[in-house]
Amino acid sequence: MRRKRLPQQGKGQSTKGEKSLSVINPDAAGIDLGSETHWVAVPSDRDEISTRPFKCFTADLYEMAAWLKRCGIKTVAMESSGVYWIPVFQILESSGFEVKLVNARHVKNVPGRKTDVLDCQWLQRLHSHGLLSGSFRPENQICVLRSYLRHRDNLVRYASSHVLHMQKALTEMNIHLHKVLTNITGLTGIRIIRAIIAGEHTPATLASMRDRRVKRTESDMRKALQGDYREEHLFALRQAVELYDYYHQKIQECDIEIEKCLQQFESKIDHINMPLSPSSKKHKPRGNTPHIDLREHYYRITGVDFTQIDGLDILSVQTIISEVGLNPHAFPSGKHFSSWLGLCPNNRITGGKVMRTSSRKVVNRAADAFRMAAFSIAHSSCALGGFYRRMRARKGAPKAITATAHKLAVIFYHLWITGDVYVDPGADYYEKKYRERVLSSMKKRAKSLGYELSLQPIT
Image (tube, rainbow, N blue to C red; front, top):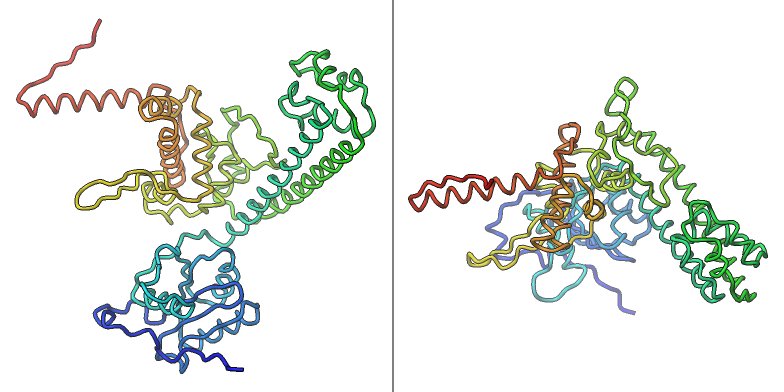
């Protein structure tokens, strides 16, 4: 059996073009991540074998960190490959290395053979010349909170799939509960479903369980609840309800851990002497909203009540904070913040010609939260609602949502950096500013042609 030979010192690392590039990070290493083996490359003068493989087990990761220390490495670059980078990142960071997580699209290898060895050497080479920029990653405490919230989102999604299973079982029994109720897992719906599972199949008895706020009449309910209660469909309905209850129990347990995590955050303001003022907006609570005072927690740790911004409820604020962190200075300006979110035009210019101006396609939960907030104020009487309707009339709904989400992001960043209180300027605020810009442009155009334009309103 032939033994696999490790790459020799400096193999594949020296090119003529490198000599003209200055070394910015002399103590840099590159790691090509894999599901079974991680390949690590260091400068050729640091060890007899400058490129080594390490298994993915924890003991091997600590051995990797020890080897990098012996080689005098201070900074490491790696691609963000699935979830394989997480344990490597955390162990190397805790060992004192500066770890840069880079976008895989930014480090495409040169044409030719593609191997794990060449990939890690390419990363090391780019990083040593300062050609790599690390992806944004919030502080560790926020990463812990983010993990809880993302796990909670998964639990909510799992629970919602069993609502569909309930709906399927009811349809198979020809029970049209969804036609007389907006939500079959609401107060009336879940009460009737539990009664059906318990053995109550009389339409009149089931219809009498309706809440007084249900708009449909009791006679409509009786007709919808007259079905074919077959045993196999009742069994499927029973298991769907049990799984739905199970996941909601796990969601409540997750909420307890989230509250414990939030309590560990340092208070940015004295919320006892500067208490949170009552909300001036009536946010209708979403389904699956945690039964904890999130608004008080996020006001305490940020010093700003972001829910005063039109369209942003506490769940949206929670998603945004968990993704962007608590340090606004991580983004130099609101323009950088909106660019990172992918909510601003991405101009592609070639030969002086603008080829494309559409926004970048990014997967970002914070950007999704801003887009959902923009869509929710489509019919509101606030300034942002008026802005959305004007943009929708000009460019259509998709671009209007992106433009309004960009406005929301800039307002969020301003409050985040200054700690000010948001005040809605009125529904016609952006319309007035638009008219002022149009009139100013008309006057400038007339002046450039040698005329002075005098405008008078029509009476």
